[in-house]
Length: 107
Image (cartoon, rainbow, N blue to C red):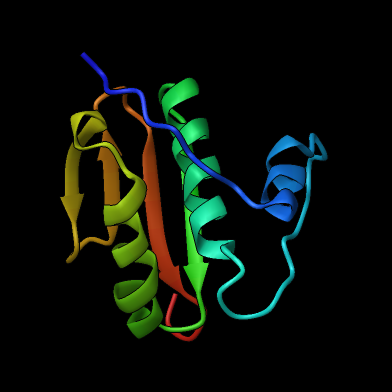
């Protein structure tokens, strides 16, 4: 059984979360919650659209490891994960969805 988690978002995060535009951007300073809201929306899409494939890109692999994957551990419910491979840089969900991780400096 999946756990229900209460998430507290800032007003700008809520606006971004509820924005139905096909393409959108959350532009803000350090510590505004860009990575967190990115994960929340990525998890929502991956779990609600079985078999989907997403891509998370960061400027460097160091940022992926130090920021993106750290934040992943804060938000991603373990019960939805099938496999996470740091070497292959892929996260697979039990419902068939996948998230790929790439760096902009070495895709």
